[in-house]
Length: 89
Image 1 (cartoon, rainbow, N blue to C red):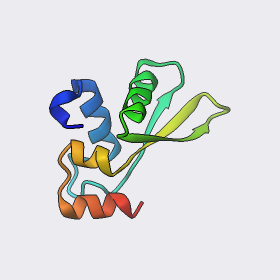
Image 2: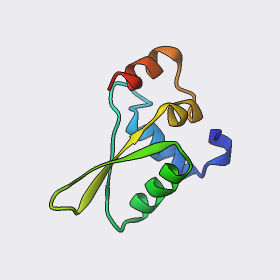
Image 3: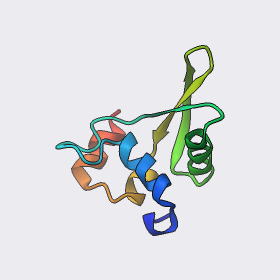
Image 4: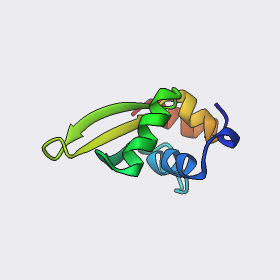
């Protein structure tokens, strides 16, 4: 799925998760969303679209991590070096 088919919030979440605006995008790979929040619902949609994977629930089950996979990195246009960093996470 290409970024043009994603909502602006979906793109923001994917970019935030991979540190897109940093000097070294791909240096991290996580987005933490409170279960039941709009962001959590958005991450579930991204997971269903094959762009993220659900991770651990933390804080007594209140929050959940989501990780960007290769398809998610490609959807936001990560370059080769950033993609390599992302996949090494």
